[in-house]
Length: 237
Figure 1 (cartoon, one colour):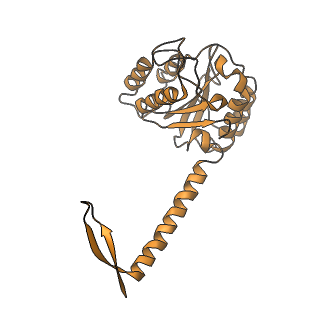
Figure 2 (tube, rainbow, N blue to C red; figure 1 turned 90 degrees about the vertical axis):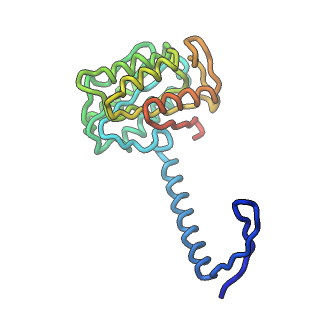
Figure 3 (tube, rainbow, N blue to C red; figure 1 turned 90 degrees about the horizontal axis):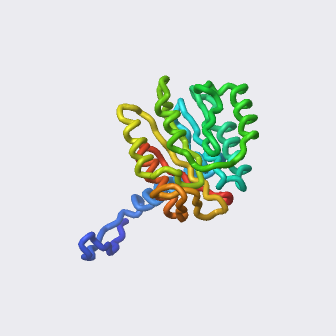
């Protein structure tokens, strides 16, 4: 049994088409299955630490965490985000390290360490000692990683609530230049403090403030320079 239906062509004309009903029903069934698979995938990616960090694929990674004064009221959310990452996505990796930038630049360990239970627990204990202050010297933290004599990690995850103190064009240019001949992915994880835009930096220099949209666009440019992804989230999700 066939049914005829009118279908608008790409050039605007209307054509009569014969539709085989069993074929149509099979197509609708497969389409429904594909939609459900897509919805399940989106739900999975939006849960737990993946909502914040995405799927951590690299085996050797480093996490750069913004502990500037702008995050002082949201430190508990920063720490919770790190806890989720340590608990769910680092097991089975080759090595990791954590670097904070705020009042100064500090590293969890002088060099990357394997994610053993002891190292993960030590990392969490260190996270609980964090205090916020100062600005966002992202460029200094990146230099510490990308100019390491032992070589950079495969993946860099920048957790921040705003744009860096330095000129964004200079930061992106440095990332692109440092990445030449290397397979390093830089991902930006934008925490929208208070559910709105974050300042404490500027796209054209320090002491400037950026709106939420400007901040997201700036970090998108940074992730693009590092051949990575941008993830945005707030206290509410």
